[in-house]
Length: 175
Ligand SMILES: [Zn+2]
Image (cartoon, rainbow, N blue to C red):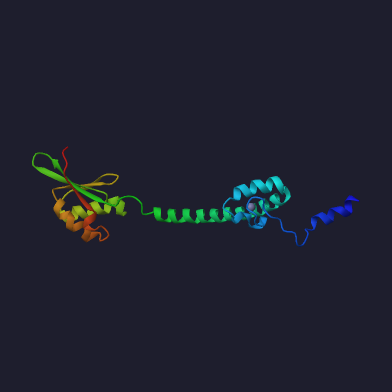
């Protein structure tokens, strides 16, 4: 009867060890053999049932490894995102531009990169130098007068986060 023969096949013979025809190790240890690919070929051909079992076991461990990698990747992305907040060059640029025949103005750019309110900064410069000062662009303040040299001292004094090293002298602009 097929019914009685079935279960007997499922129970593995207790002391039966299957050896690999390629590396001669018990098939459970095949995966540690350097020529495991050849072992798999041999197993697939000669012990297809055992081969399938080994493959299933391998698949499960591969899935677990894959899941672990995904978790690490997500964590990694989070760290990158957190760091990105401070991206972008931080620099204040000062330059002098001619105005009229004899006078010049001082152009200040880059205060935005230090999250400084340009209107507040412009008003501060105007008061400090007793001259006209206005916001002239997204990140540009023009001070009426040649005050570039003074700004190298005054800006770090007013905003300690802007070290003098962060201030670039662009020299004279020709308009
Ligand atoms: Zn083998």
